[in-house]
Image (cartoon, rainbow, N blue to C red; front, top):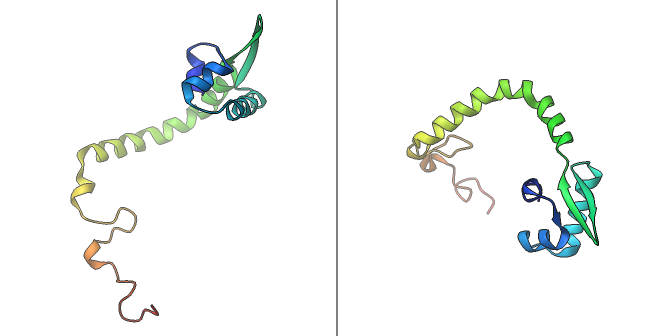
Length: 113
């Protein structure tokens, strides 16, 4: 929704049409975004137009800046590793590092099932 509103102000019905949400769900999201200070309402004739308020996002961006310096190199290395596809060739489980042939059978010896 923020991405849509970033381009230009939209009326609720335009947001509903663009995102395929119901009108009540869209209105609820807009209320939450307004309460968070991320969007504001502009009255234009009979319409209420919603637009992004960039100030809170800029404040968040400033707050995150020192942390980006810490995690960007690690994320770059992760991206390079994922680009190689090497992890696909190992046959190892991504969480445990175990090869599928060495994983214990849950119904094997000692199981209650």
